Length: 100
Image (cartoon, rainbow, N blue to C red):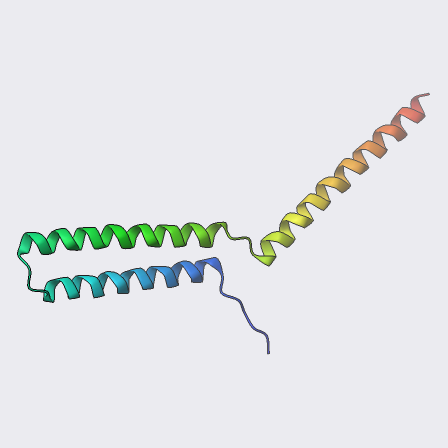
């Protein structure tokens, strides 16, 4: 049986669901609290801003965190660049030798 690791898309979806759940919970709690309408709306705005910032921070972390596949791809790309450079250099030297 193979195990699949959550991709960054899945992590983003989970973060989105967590954010939405938190917003719904916060709004419900604020609406149930005995406050004046203006105070309640202000509290809702402040909570939404705070939650939005937290989700953005999580999203940035998920998108910038290197994954094993990303590290392997970067290593392969760097190796390919090195091989290309070596082949080009060798070909230039061989071409120079044939001109002499």
